[in-house]
Length: 265
Ligand SMILES: *[C@@H]1O[C@H](CO)[C@@H](O)[C@H](O)[C@H]1NC(C)=O
Ligand SMILES: *[C@@H]1O[C@H](CO)[C@@H](O)[C@H](O)[C@H]1NC(C)=O
Ligand SMILES: *[C@@H]1O[C@H](CO)[C@@H](O)[C@H](O)[C@H]1NC(C)=O
Image 1 (cartoon, rainbow, N blue to C red):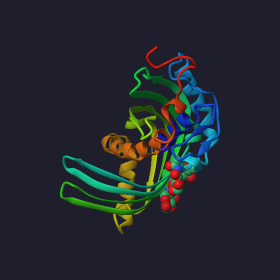
Image 2 (image 1 turned 30 degrees about the vertical axis):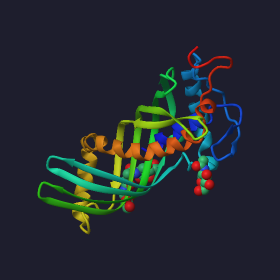
Image 3 (image 1 turned 90 degrees about the horizontal axis):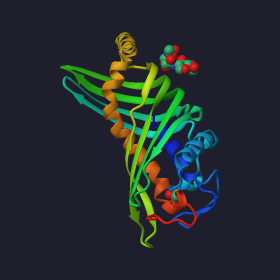
Image 4 (image 1 turned 180 degrees about the vertical axis):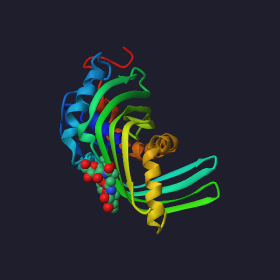
């Protein structure tokens, strides 16, 4: 689900037409339409930019050290879960998430009229998402310890939701403004999920198969329970990625004002 993060980076990074100069002096070429942050068409502009550029930038962007968009690779993700009788810890390693290039950007809403704040919501739909990788899990269900370690594959269909992104202006040593991303929220709805995990109950194939059947039968319950905890981790993954863009490209280059206008006009 880290898929959604990089998509947004691409949108914002490619939103200007003149080449931008990064903090480290590197110059970046121009892609797509320019989106003026005080234009009445800004939201539509972002929507179109996202929609056209995400599928094009599958391989990432080396100038901003962004890795590929389809698949999105995350080396490690930590999930802690604790609620009543169930507690657990899962480490997900080398996950690859495929499907972002099939994105449909449904709607964009933003409040950018405050010079110090950034506030944007993006509604999206993904017909198919597949994620694979390795996991290690340990926990307790009541007094019963569970422990597993293996590989996993999860197929999802009809994934939809909203990225909620907030930022706060920061100034660099030259008094240039950047919009630092401070919050990233998302709670994807999933239409259907098929889960395959090997060795769910360490060393016991029979119990592993039973556990897997159980998880697939009750995937919705499991997903709903874990989602709030997962969301905190998505934010930890998402913010640094978004900030690779937002703290590299000055705000006035990322989303300029309409020519001849000022912030307080
Ligand atoms: C990307 O990484 C390289 C090497 O690690 C570094 O020199 C460069 O400044 C980074 N670029 C950005 C935009 O972070
Ligand atoms: C699940 O994974 C195992 C081994 O990784 C494989 O043998 C099996 O065919 C997979 N099942 C499905 C439904 O993908
Ligand atoms: C996920 O989809 C792939 C490709 O369609 C398929 O090979 C695989 O068996 C599916 N895995 C699960 C867990 O359903």
